[in-house]
Length: 533
Image (tube, rainbow, N blue to C red):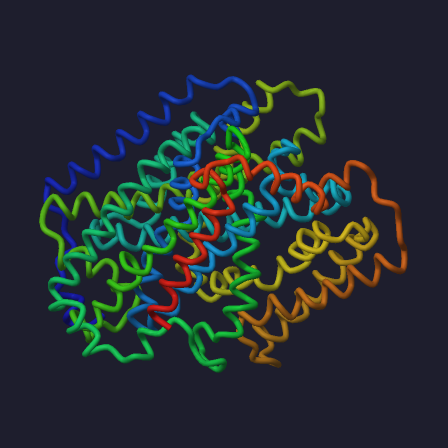
């Protein structure tokens, strides 16, 4: 670490420390209070299906913006430019797609998990495969990664405290209210955390812009390449073809099929609130450019000699923010960390309980399922605490695990996308796709990541495997055609239902019409992207 970074004082003033302690106590207290308000599995895992759109949107946003995201957005903007924002604005487009096509189906079916949708469309094996994969990614990658990133920053503040202790404290705090309060506690605390996160990020942007001498000064000292969202096809960060294909596919997995995100939408009181909540989350993703990405660009002017990109965000915090304000913003960082942890713990618990335990022991009642969920959450919390410190010793392994997504999810994406729009996709076709798609993913992973036989950008991996799996599903379904069941037909998009909805929307005022809101969101997204083309 260079002298400039070493000169940064990462110590906390007592006022800032008190603010952090108050935040922790409040969060735990709220979770424990909410634990008294449920007694069934539906209450615990889906908040009684009573959530309204502002809470859903803010919870989606908070669950998505983890501690690793905050550090990564600023760090990438500093080292390679603002192209990292492409992952953020693409979310708005994907959520519009989700709101129009998938959301009505999954809410009407009253499913608990997204793997359950695959079982009802295809078979039990598809559900088991996707549920197991999601649990693995949630705990080994998402939860442990967030704990590790949070531990790194907390280590700067408390250098004498072992990282394992810091990680354990963070996990236990998030685990307490998640175990006690279920999804309702997660969503309500996420809402507060989202507001705190947005407020803190706005403050960082204001202080950074002021210290950098204004936007014109930043533009004059930063290359046009670093301020461009659309990159050449050979760009090592986000090539434009990878943006159109890879980012879109991985975004569909994250926002439309990943349990820890979709679970918030499943808790909606009705279809309208689910749609509005999803669109609201998409809207919240757009200011991320100005309050989380561009501060990393401003750091190029402020701290041009930083050697490590992961130090950009902590340096901005401790160099720019005064006493009191630092405590609030740091609470926002911790809020992002806690939101990721509580979301993944609750999601993994739901998957284990509803996709495995309930299937194995169908006689369990709603209250017993809730208790199982609380026990599973506790177990996963302990596992995450044990695994997270090991990431420091196996950095290359963790990088591999993060890349697993591109190699592992294409078979499932094909089942969700083609199976939803083509009723000719069969159960046998789904099985063949999972087997051959997984084999293809493992083979490509070994060739590209381990043996070095190929050098494909990870954003091209997902589309290549997606095309391969699509061909497998279509071919194997045509070879062994089968009549679709009535239950499976419920999970195939219907033009008739879409037209009926169009007719119903004619009587809705424009401000309630989700299609009008979707168009406005897409226009706003285009304007933001066009401004930094």
